[in-house]
Length: 248
Image (cartoon, rainbow, N blue to C red; front, side, top):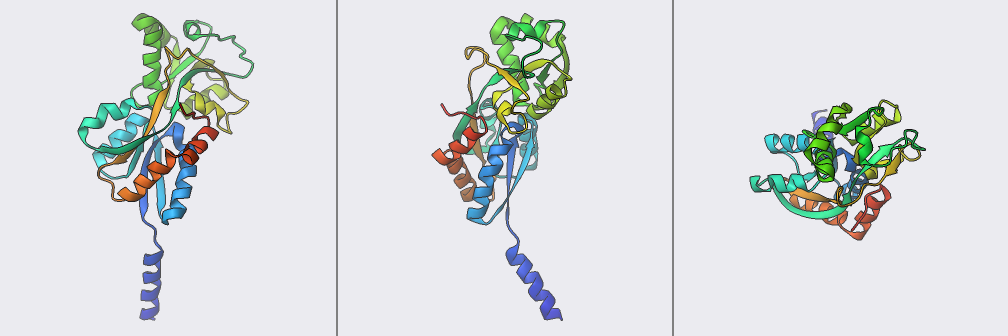
């Protein structure tokens, strides 16, 4: 009996998969999950994706010193924290861009950033303290007409969205009329036909590079690097494009 139990335990030990930990900005979870499934099969490893706001994710990985990959919603997070020594090998995997979101048929006739200060509109932005789309929204509005315009928009905000997914839910359930969000999310299956995108001039809303980065304390460096290389490959970028993320 003891031999049988030991054999079962040994079999379970052999079959147990190692786990790679991936901190992923919520906007990129769908394409990264698809890529993760390919890498899981190739290396017989489980990939756990922790999703959330880019700032919160970095705070979590820097305090725990556990994990393997980090993908924020903007390369500004990489630049900001690079000197801390936690971010290593990295590659560009696509880009995203902020745009105005409204309901289909644009019932409130939103045309430009100027409409964000209209008193008849319920406006939302992402929380600039925790998520990339909120942080970038502040920069876009400042580029457009300066600090004073930003303050006027902030006075018109009914609530701040926790992240891009939260923003889209608020819009679809008609709790808000418009605001800025990452344009790729409008093309996700659950949002197609339910959200209309109004482009913002690139001089105000530039394309933001998405940089997938190895964490220097990773315990699975070779697999993590293989993940990065695949995501940056032609096949990986094709997956990104299928979810609305475009290549340069």
